[in-house]
Image 1 (tube, rainbow, N blue to C red):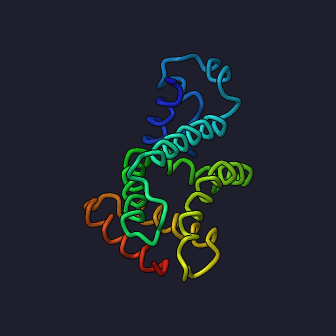
Image 2: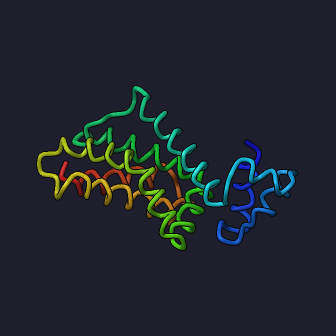
Amino acid sequence: MELKAAAVRVFARTGYLNAKITDITAEAGRATGSFYKHFASKEQLLEALLADLLAEGDASAATPEHGDDFRDRAAVRYHVATYWHFYRRHRTIVEALRQAATVDEAFARRSQEMMEPDLRHIAGHLAKIDDLPGDPLMVATIFTATLSAFAQVWAPQKDDEAIETLTSFLHRGMGA
């Protein structure tokens, strides 16, 4: 949908918080009223973008390379590399989600609810580790937060080195 693509371009230029619906519709070459035929608010558009990202993540989990046992370093590496490249492609949207959650508690809750199945998916991988240093859901939260924060800070650096270092760090930290 052109409004979503236009929103991403506007978010990249101005940031989510500074983006206005009129900016998005102008970028899309549409009348402002057309926005409201699809979305009730800028937050609802961002939720639609998040749903698209989650669907992409579900597709990557269905590939044969997707390992589900985090005792296996290769399974951890798959998840790290997949997220790393995902972040590279969708950095603007991920940052918009972060900005929206910072200023809108209701949006933060809704987005957490939308992402909970993915977090539980990671927790299921972690549950296979005998000496896991905590509850699988808690460790999954640490895993995903570490991955996200590192990608945010280190993304301009060499991909292979970052993926290998982060994989080793997380794999060892989980006690695998």
